Image (cartoon, rainbow, N blue to C red):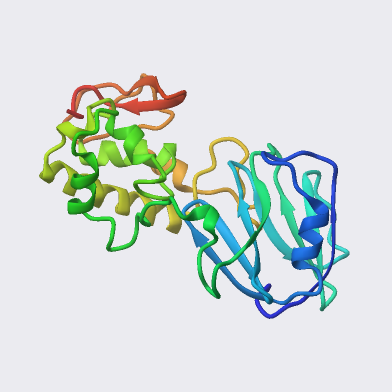
Length: 261
């Protein structure tokens, strides 16, 4: 829908996102330019344009993008709208305004912008392995859940999926990262990849107001083993524990104290 199209205009509301949107800069970087590529890196979306400019988009918790006809009904939280050379519109929507739209310059065609240079490896890539995670945990005193969510270690693992992966691996979230064995790192890497693939197949996780671009809800919430289940029985076969909620680094953590060690 976007690749190959040329943007002919842009308009934005005055609503502030996580980072203030520089509408004049967005117009200079996008209008009159063709979309060459759209790709993901970690939790970011890179939209590359002819001439070496790009937009770095973050959807936050509730952001979404859609390409639709110009006469399509307006949604309440459409913050940035571009017009395309075929008359359609590309709309950026974010009810809770945790997302961002930032202009950047690419060092080379197809390259990541410099703003992403500190991101770690992709969780579904071969680079994220038992060996790489084990190396990253050495002499690290922070809890393993916090390390797993550190975007400089592995890019793209959020709070819900970190909780679910740790449960799948049988690892207690507050354990010091350096205390994990290589076998535990192997189980954890496998669990991260499994959880993410299942969530992708289910269209994501709708807890409150997350929606896919077509307005549908993510279905992975029905598969959650621990997240949001405080006080309920553990779903691991043979375990009689109950899910406990704690807080780590300001984020909700859910685990079974009986079977996660």
